[in-house]
Length: 296
Image 1 (cartoon, rainbow, N blue to C red):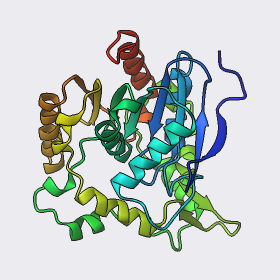
Image 2 (image 1 turned 180 degrees about the vertical axis):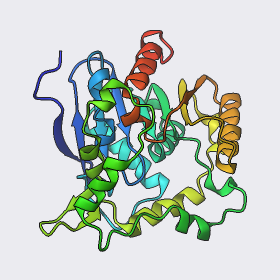
Image 3 (image 1 turned 60 degrees about the vertical axis):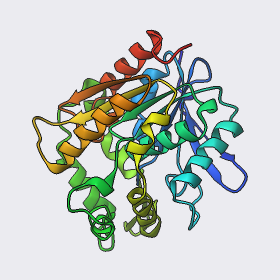
Image 4 (image 1 turned 90 degrees about the horizontal axis):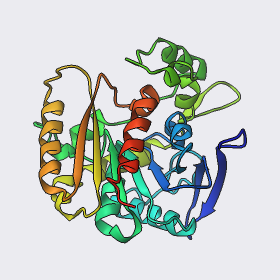
């Protein structure tokens, strides 16, 4: 049973990098959670405690994010994947199920194809299927503009908090509505004594990840995944944009090429579904673990 000391927050040295992580339970089947681009381990703050009633849940701040080290290089997929390998080895994790949100799903995909011996399953949470070079009319130059982070000069922490109060979070569950989502989102930023802010992930490093995304081809990796893979894709209504059409195409390709897979649309769900509908995600993950989808 959980008590007030969780989550535990700690850091581990993986040789050339110190990574920060949060751990919600010491016992049970291990679940390793990877956040998305410009996010951090706190995106799992609502989902993890529910899962931790039955499983050991660990969430890491990836390179350049959260409270982890922020080197100026190493934001390609091979290096970031090797970071996760180092993290798994340093903490002596035993075949965890890896849950990745957005870019974190893409990192999890690379991990599954490069080091299948280290993990027992994958779960993509509105991620893992991102192939920006296939978006009609897209180019690297356009992607570097459309996927660039906000410019925070002249914006104060109070400005951001006001915006967050007005944000439409969609159809939230009880855990979400009772939580302070503002604090979770603000963890992506550093606030200074004068009220100014900056993103924890630098703009330069953010754009390096975008460049890596341009060369990332998940459609060519699906067939190399050997572990059971649960694909949870968020969808709002009957959206028919180019982005949604491509998402459908990649989901169908994944379903055809991944040896053992199960996919599900999370209806009425936004991209940040881990803090919008954590109860739904927890229920789906728990049911699939307990039913044996991910093996023993």
